[in-house]
Image (tube, rainbow, N blue to C red; front, side):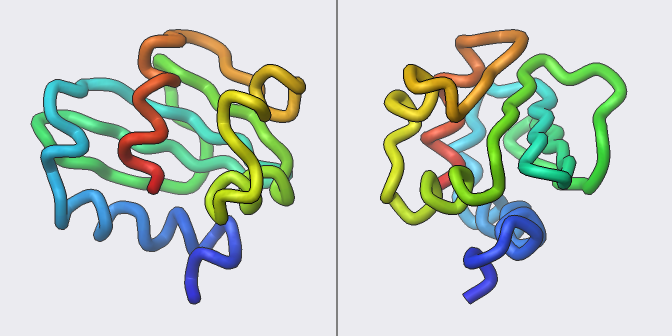
Length: 106
């Protein structure tokens, strides 16, 4: 399964999001993910998304997490709100956008 790795998750994310554009409705933003040593950004506009490796020029929301904790979030072993409260998940920028992450990362 591709989602057992961070790289696999981000490589499959764009295709998943394109299958259900309603998850991106009304969003026009750039998310930056720093997962362990890896960096990816997700550009969302007009119900479409583009996922690219590396840092974005000007992201509105930056998420920083260890690779193990990210994989636990994806598998459901770790709750996003609890991870944030425990300091395992750090968010910078627009907190409103951070709250929308759960809707399209599943």
